Image (cartoon, rainbow, N blue to C red; front, side):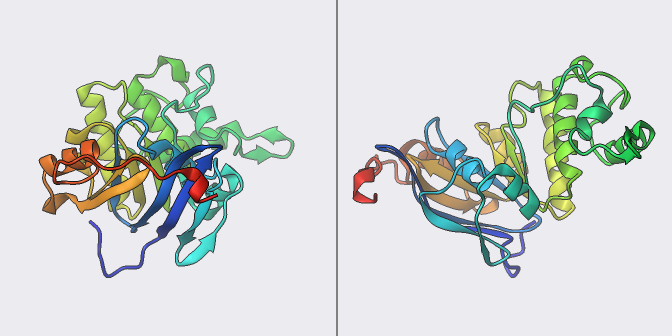
Length: 262
């Protein structure tokens, strides 16, 4: 659980993003702490994906800045965010179906013995890594296309953990999963939180968020409608933030004209 006496590992300050004449984000600010799950909720078009792409280095922010451990950081590409300790598991998982589990885990990070790939070490390290995950796999040698949805998700999460990130961003990790597999993935999220990782969980499923998140950040029309501690909030309050952008049930104004900030 979050300890408010600790310094945030990541802080977004006044983040804005403009695409031509379209303003996708405006003045987005929040903090993320070690050992917490921060859920990001919002309707389609609320700005969730744009925010995550900025944090993961896929987009540059038009305005504002990001701090990690109190120091400003700039990500010009996803590799910069990875090097800073931010790992992202995208909804499409980006797995190579015809390769086995071990090959997918170490894709691009293969161990070598002289000029040759050290497959024995890769299999050994893959088994060691997967032994720490909640979801069990039949073998590290099985092709990924034979795995269930939850098992594929575990492989995708395991792959980003190899780099030892401090922050893990998960984009709809239970999308298209059944109830049991979704629960196993959510347990894996909680296990990572308990291990001290800071987790950003993007989701549309309020029930799952309520069982997993420590805090909830609600996006509405490209702005932060509110940030609530889950234990001190209600489902009704969060739904109003998602739908109306506030918790009193009245409609909010749309985003300001991007030309006013260009």
